[in-house]
Image (cartoon, rainbow, N blue to C red; front, side, top):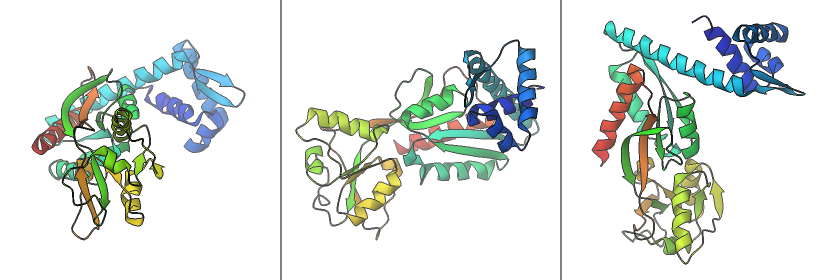
Length: 298
């Protein structure tokens, strides 16, 4: 416990890349912060920062130490959550990394439902692409992740998998709006906007296009699905999204159609945690709540 404040200082310096900037952020003097870091290094028996001409960065020993600290903080949160459960009052904090598609509708609904029963639990939600979500789990920045088409799955323990068919999003008056299912080649014959390459939707589109006769030639490429959703209202173009991120109300001017599985196989939305980690009670219970919600969708 005595080193938790030291960890806060170390993390601040790590994020800032500079002792002076970290000191400004924490409203202390740079000399005081530097003495605190040096005193810790003396007790630890090794330097943890590499001093550079324009700042500092963690050395290998420092990276191992930070990973250890994060694991200890995670274990402490788990015990605190268990103790809170003994009193019958569920408390705790749940950190979630999720794909952008979950942000507008699914995740707010699920968190609000959970907090109706457990108002003492707080949340932090980080939008992460499929690689960054896995990195958040392995560095204890997030307890659980809900991400479309993760990349590595080395430290990712899958708790639930839900198939998601890629949909083409368009205006109601688009020439393809009357068809129940769309071929990818027909979509690519029209102006289209696509997500950046770090997203699972783009990965599936690129893979499918490489096998076909049409190339992806977007009029706009963006890292915001919300932007793409609104853009097609201005230019009669197509965008691409997974169903969990789509809620189209009458009068919105938008409609969506699934892409044929012959061209673009469905991808997987995966709920997961760091492999081998025992989650705090609140995080484990929320993960179970998400599993039930996802099961209801299948």
